[in-house]
Image (tube, rainbow, N blue to C red; front, side, top):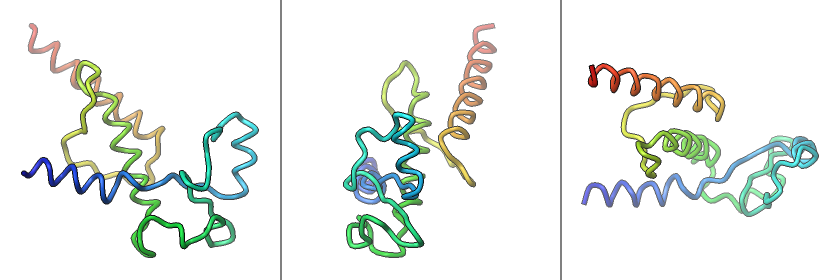
Length: 125
């Protein structure tokens, strides 16, 4: 039951969180070939301290920080990439991330992989 409730919590409180950006950055990202599949449905676009695509479209009530939930979703997704044998898995552990992003997540994941390899090499000897 515990695993099911954790999965339901993830599905309800984390998974629906959308990515976010500033309106000024949208055209620049498009010029770089990024956000080709981007839309108002999958992103929140900020402009002048408000949501350009409407605060009424937020997936969580005001004050419940959809953007912070999306940062958590990014972290979980990036760390899930190191699952053993390429099998999808959510990482287990306690992680505190401050001003994190994909670049920092990937550096952390690489460090974890390095430590796992070192431990594995020690066990083989």
